[in-house]
Length: 180
Image (cartoon, rainbow, N blue to C red; front, side, top):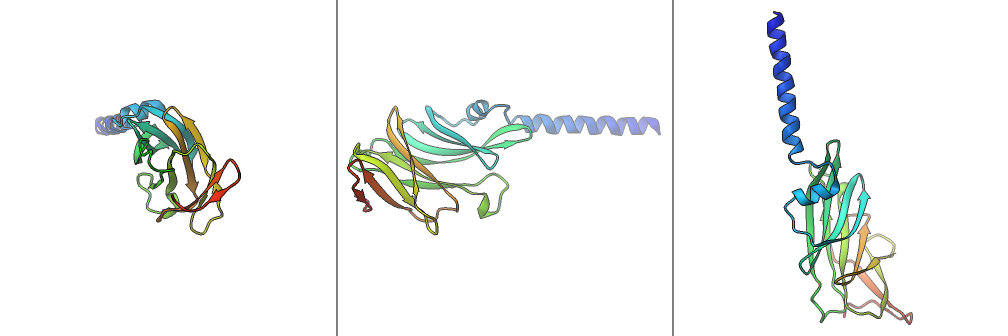
């Protein structure tokens, strides 16, 4: 009887170790290792923040601006999803915009989305950018100088399902709410 219990105990320990090893192959101890282990090409990370226990990064690969969600769990970090692809070379546009709703793995609720609008600013006269999402007050977007030009981004409290309204505020105080 004792021998059977020992074998069962050893089998359970081996099974647990096997599961942990498999899990650690997809999870990394640091955010940097999770990014490298994702096989996603990243040239430069412009911004990172923690949101709802996960890491959000805004980054560039080649000439494209993108965003990603990296999950934080008990075992470390794990690349979840990314989206974007705003081109830095659209110089004929005053600014570009796109949006993404990043959903952590295993989540089913719309409240779990991390929603971001972002783009590239090609007009040096723009001082601020106001973003108006549906059923939310206008909020000032974050504008950053990067090695490839100025970018903007803004987090939404709710999932984004249409292009948000933008108001460009110029250095002289002029506000323009039309796209071009």
